[in-house]
Amino acid sequence: MSSTTARQPAESSARPVSSAPAGSAARGGSDAATVRRAHPGDVDAMTGIYNEAIRAHELTCHADELTAEELRAWLFTTEAYPAHVVEERARVVGWSALVRFHERAAYAPTVEMFTYVARAHRRRGHGGALVARGLDAARRSGFHSVVALAPSGDPLVARWIERGDFARAGSLRLPSTPSGRLAEVAVLQAIVS
Image (tube, rainbow, N blue to C red; front, side, top):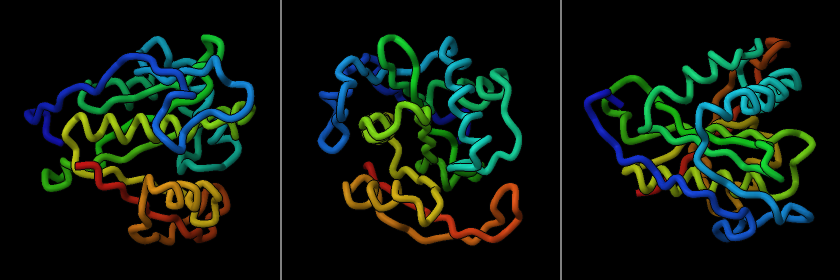
């Protein structure tokens, strides 16, 4: 999206995970969980969660861990692309962000979504709540579609499609990190306008 194209910032209030849209309610003992708009003060926790995924070679194509400064520059350069966090007992345990999909102007109405939840806090509905909030933020911000990439064999892909959050738009064969073997990556798309 060009810097001259202004989007309206998405809603910033915190909402309990248990009152998130259908399909994203928390399971188990996470009644204290809330999803809210992320702010630069969350970057250290967000970086820790992201680097955990990098070390585990899951759901990211980064080979090297990021610094908090690198994540801050990636996610907090403009209000046009909102990021959200999920908190349990006032501690950030997951995050999602919308980022520019492609530099060419024709792709400006499409954003890419990243969603990460700390390993110890998964299977509690946090990822679904973050996806629902991200899709709502994209809609409110005037974007047309949201794209997400994930390993084709990951159960997450099937859940997102089954829940109706995304449709499978295709796949890519890309070298996996760090092995260099080709892996199939699902390209998922949600039309939000």
